[in-house]
Length: 105
Figure 1: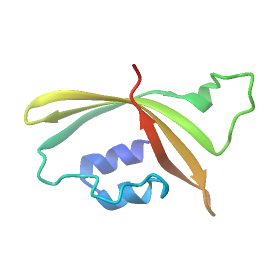
Figure 2: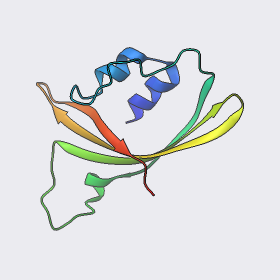
Figure 3: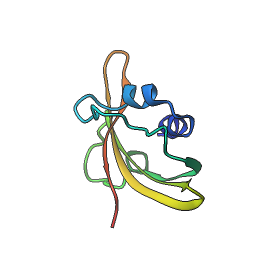
């Protein structure tokens, strides 16, 4: 999660695509180089598997969910992105991939 945030701050399109799961990775560009966007802060709210919110079920070792808030500025105006992201671990050696996310109500 943190490495993907850093890739956004640096405009590293290649890393973002590399760490996005192939089943949900967009074919088009993720970043717009013309957009005047400045990332300000990342706050990890929770890593759900690590906090074991659902103690009745066995943990899934190759899947995790992360809730975060990222603050950024566009054309001088501050915005917040609050997302719950799903990640899966696959491959040899195992590697984490961003699968998808939703915006909590």
